[in-house]
Length: 183
Image: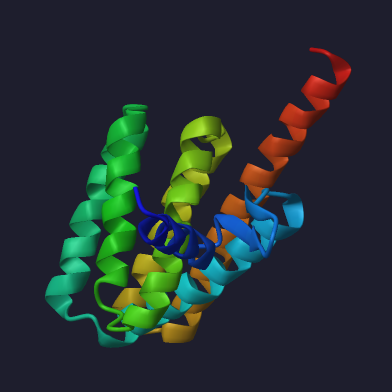
């Protein structure tokens, strides 16, 4: 492989925030610490809450019925403790909201970190209380959609992402403490 395609690939990875290129040193994988993770979730919170506000203000009655149907599937999966189906329905719920944003730039930024979020969720799963909290938060968002309450939907979505961040960061801390204690 010639140097140019490698250089371009490294620049792409740097643009994605995955590596750090240092002149005359080379490339290194960018680490993930609590500050970076918090910053990533703060971006997700701002973007996803904005998308949710937009959905509340612009969704048709048909769109709202569709997201309600997705939520019914999510509810059934939670009741059955079917993690795979619940996760799939959760993804559909959020993708339905995102599909109405019309903001390609913000969605590209969201997508930049989506795989990290998915990987963290797969690694740590959901704590039992979080399943019910997610269900409750989704129903609150749907109520805001029915009322066309953009700012209410924004506030709920903001808390929704923040709660996910708190849970994931708590799980990482627990794991670090267990490793430090030799458990």
